[in-house]
Amino acid sequence: MENTRKKVVAIATAALTALSLTACGGGSSTSTATSGSATTSTASTATSTTSTAAGTSGGTVANKDKPVCWFNRQPSNSSTGELDMTALNFNDKTYYVGFDANQGAELQGQMILDYIKKNAASIDRNGDGVIGYVLAIGDIGHNDSIARTRGVRKALGTAVEKDGEIDSAPVGTNTDGSATDVQDGTIDVDGKTYTVRELASQEMKNSAGATWDAATAGNTIGTWSSSFGDQIDIVASNNDGMGMSMFNSWSKDNKVPTFGYDANSDAVAAIAEGYGGTISQHADVQAYLTLRVLRNALDGVDIDTGIGTADDAGNVLTSDVYEYNADERSYYALNVAVTADNYQDFTDATKVYDPVSKQLDSSAHPTKKVWLDIYNASDNFLSSTYQPLLQNYDDLLNLDVEYVGGDGQTESNITNRLGNPSAYDAFAINMVKTDNASSYTSLLSQ
Image 1 (cartoon, rainbow, N blue to C red):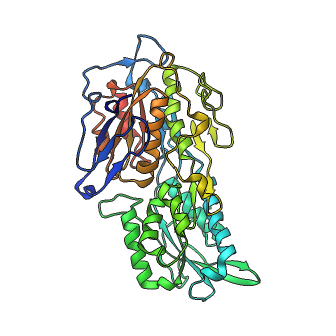
Image 2: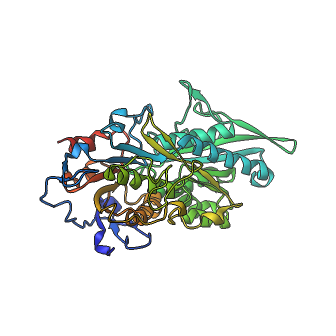
Image 3: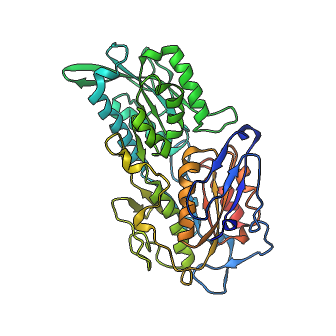
């Protein structure tokens, strides 16, 4: 495949002019989405109004009947977490691909707890008997962020229930332990009882409204450390983007263990320099599943092909790396803790997963056009890990993918680039807000 097969539309605002998405995947996928610029795709300006129907020869299919894969952000109510089953059942070729958020959240919390138990005496920096931690929250309305906050608090004994669920709200500052959204926990180590306290937590949202913001996290750790620096013994983050920003800004120099999530390559490498650990959400499996469900729907074959059942090239996943919930029409990759004990096995986050790395025969699986958006072109995990993986897999699956990079703030910033859905055979959608599935389905229903 030639590089020209990759079409990228970059969408950004002036607030992001210093940021860019660098696709570092292998093969012919070397496209780059850069703030403030746009490469117009010939596909998006095509004059055709129909595309070949999935699983047929010479037929046409309405946009509302084309395969759709929601990924990374599951259609749901951002306040309650209730799944948007209307979006998940948009048509009989609609699926969601993500990871088991609760399992991953429990792993992160347990990873931090295990580290504290092993190192309590040395990490209690001021010797006050209180293991103080700060928590960077990505998005208070995002199910994954909520799960990770709850996972940390549950493991460390700082959780407080509200309406039958662990409260996931940010506490602001809580150096005296008086906050009502959390409580002090205790840990017994070698006959000594330590208090565990969430000193501070905050949603990392920038002035333009973008969440999971690494720069905001870096600035915030500076504020926290200036106010109560020697009380901070652990830094926890809902993702590695924010975690690495805090690590590089403060934690590394002060030898404070920092824990993130996503197993981004820079975070994995930083474990050798004192980064405490991270969670691999098997992005290699997620990226494969994102495009695989579309490939199967387009081919008109059983959705399990190349997933739980080997395809004609021999691609297949084992049940220990994913699970499928038929009621939710959702595929979930399973998570793995990455620590000093095993980090060398995870140093290349953009390497395709070997069991599903075989090229499909183009005569049996002809090239199809896919429109795919990344909600925020500056999101560290999606830009440095997920998209490069997608760009590796799209070649293997004979999919001509147009990658659209959003600004992380408004849905219209992305949907405005879907002016001619009839030019595509399938769609992979990564929303800005989980509530906004209808912004996309309404376009496909016209």
